[in-house]
Image 1 (cartoon, helix red, strand yellow):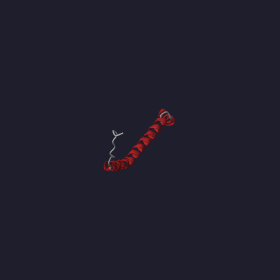
Image 2: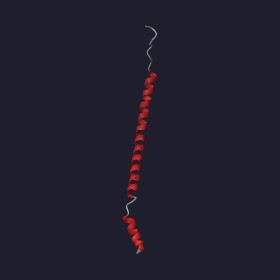
Image 3: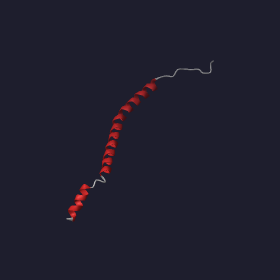
Image 4: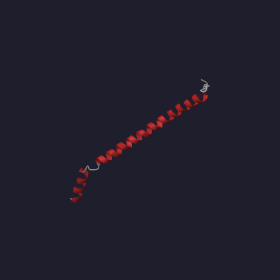
Length: 68
């Protein structure tokens, strides 16, 4: 009978349930963050390359600041 009482007590005890919920929720949020960073990274690299190409092709105006 003592074994059944231990099992029943273990089944009814919820003291660690909130911790498990937070661990699962935190893991889901971290996973979502990694997925977002992975998907945005390729797009930002493409935009950065386009900006670099545009800026490299441009020329600067010849400005003389010493002439009043």
